[in-house]
Image (cartoon, rainbow, N blue to C red; front, side):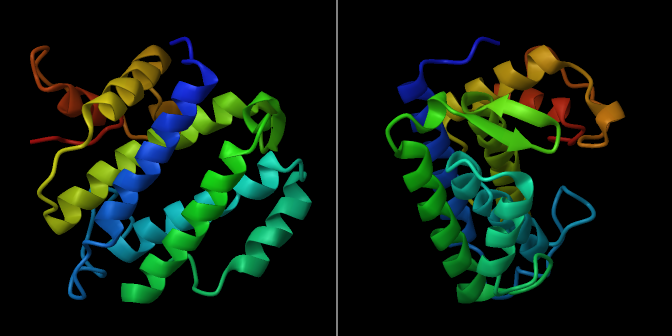
Length: 200
């Protein structure tokens, strides 16, 4: 899938952040230890994963290499990735998301190259991958807490287009093998099925 124009991609990323944040703030006090469709993670661990991932955005877009970016991320961490609940966890999400949004919105940020574990990568590719991850994990979180609103259609379309072109990713260890769903299933069901999640 060809990536959209930079301004459109930025809007999608910011919308994906907002979508995930809405669900973080909807987590009830009794739901942080609940399981999620990511079977190895509780709600608190899932949110912690996205916080950690989002904290890398600003230092990487500012040109830091992995080592220096990692030190910045570690210095910002006050709750363990796999713990921390309630208002503290939600507040950490808000702080991380704001820093990432500011960095991604800076002039020229998405024309840069970032240093990832796989090597140098265009910043636009990095932001697109983050957007997909936010969309999929928003679905995980809303399933785990019974959040009532659907994912925004434009985010589902973008994420589906990105993952459909990649194909079976089970060999990467990132996702399980795709789940079979009818060809006329809702697009969001086909999206999560590509990641090995059962939408039923």
